[in-house]
Image (cartoon, rainbow, N blue to C red; front, side):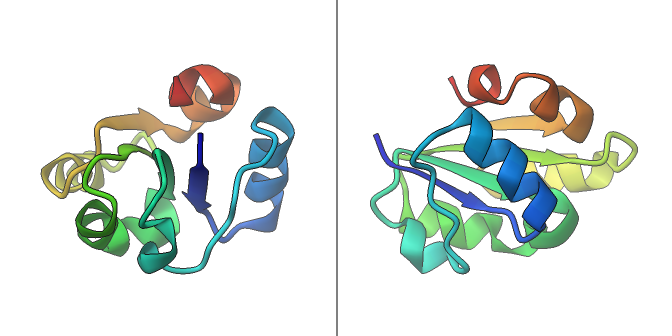
Length: 99
């Protein structure tokens, strides 16, 4: 299973990599084309969700962001995210969030 994460923050990358061995951290949606799961950080990469869905039409897209930004959550769902979680919930159990 190929999992990509469009997450630019190095601390977040470290936490995710510890929970999901083998995860890839590309810089652009095109690099997620053959992924089974794509993680998107809405705080910094919300603008790429539609492109991710276009590049990986069958991938499960899991997005996370600040719980106070309901508009970003709604836009993420509209742009193709299968699951949208508050940042705290995502990082509480990363492996479960991706399952």
